[in-house]
Length: 483
Image (tube, rainbow, N blue to C red):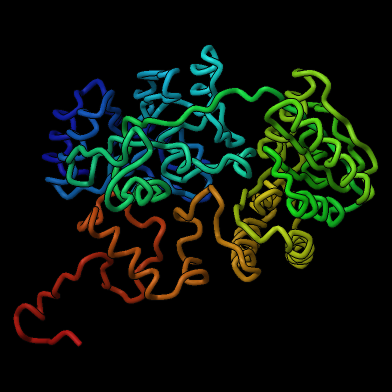
């Protein structure tokens, strides 16, 4: 139970009408999209503005209460899992588009605005927001900042960090600061860049100023089938080698295609081993010339069917199939885990072969959907919890993430480390690297109240505390010495 004085302080900070304390309602906040990690919070507060967030954080700081920021709860790494005896600060009521500046191509947003709603608000000015995660209809810009989300078009346009100009942030002691500049230029250390992708461990992002882009003159999209995943992967390498940087290059294997077709009937070929979605955008003349080269490269690698979207509706249908893939897998498996890792493009065929073998050894199926252009894999491990397969599925998911590191990649491309992969961080980083990250975190949050237990591995020794050094009581009494 939360200390009564702390609970009273939080109610006073945001108002009783913005507090959830009913045990049944609290269960709604016990996990994010990775449901294998659960913890019911002691309290949920729902501030409506930056001042309310700061007041709630100050109350937590003064009473030593750990807190976790939460947006839409669509994260897939356990990054928004609450802490026992802690508080969830939900940002779902902060969902206003505060400003659209069509002259300077900027938007100012509260953290609860969904990714897709940014583009909808900007569309009347001929502008849009480039990062587009598959969950863009429901995921929020605050969560995108926390995880440095990318999406299908990140190959050409980059990730969230490439489009956020500045942020109003509430630090773990309740102080309100601004990181970055609306011009995109700044003096001194790039604290904006440090904060983006920190998974909620350095503070809570509130007002966010993002860069908007002008809607391209032309968009050309094709869907190509291939006799193998290897053939499709070689197309990706050849495209980049030819100097063509598509707006997006997405790949799906047969399992993922079957699931998506059952869900949305987007026109994918059910029998094909692999399919690529390739999209180009920009000036008409440039797109036309490059599109012909893309088609030639696909045909050179044994393309068995090539469908070119002739209308905006056809293009939307192709993307509907790709973006429905994660949820659609529920149609072919009662349970599944979405993993996230990155490998060099040149090793795509190798890693997919290894994953297939690992799945076979574990007695489980793995569907693959990924951003092929930048090697960001999203393997979906299919299992049946009622059949006792959960433990094997979790181990296989972890093994796949660590395989990405073994092949020269990373543990995450956009879903984050969170609770899920914190213990795998030493596979990618040495002790000095992790210690440096820990010192940065401690500079922002010395008392580890802000989303504790996430991102960095847990202490190696019983009683060892992360963060700045705190002398043991026996050391202070002169009974023992620090080595």
